[in-house]
Length: 188
Image (cartoon, rainbow, N blue to C red; front, top):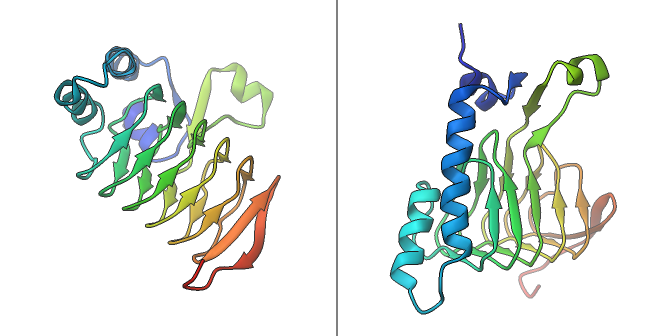
């Protein structure tokens, strides 16, 4: 029999009030509070908090607090990724972010979702769908990335977009819902 955490990570319906999951979220909340209150003039302390919160982060990760996530442990981040102010990652399933990807302020990455059937929602069950964002992607400010989305390498997502479906590599995409506007050449 799978644990609630195993169900969650597999994208199956699970009970988020499970004691193990509640304890892991509480741990993340305490680390986030410390990170979000950390001082610019204490970079070693901030780096230690980030490493503890996001153990699968590559070198050179730069987060401008405040930053928010559910667990942190389900986020895999490549080298030299930048998160501007006020970003949120709901990482109930794996969220993979490629190297050198840039996030504008207020980007929301939602791997979490809820059942469409109200009766199932009333039972307190939820689920998630993994998200992957390629290398060298630029995500503009206030973008929302919905559950299950894949964004290809080197693409640019315009500010304010709501990404509801996959975006291929090497394109500029924008809108609500986000759609490909044009291909990008090597000159951008």
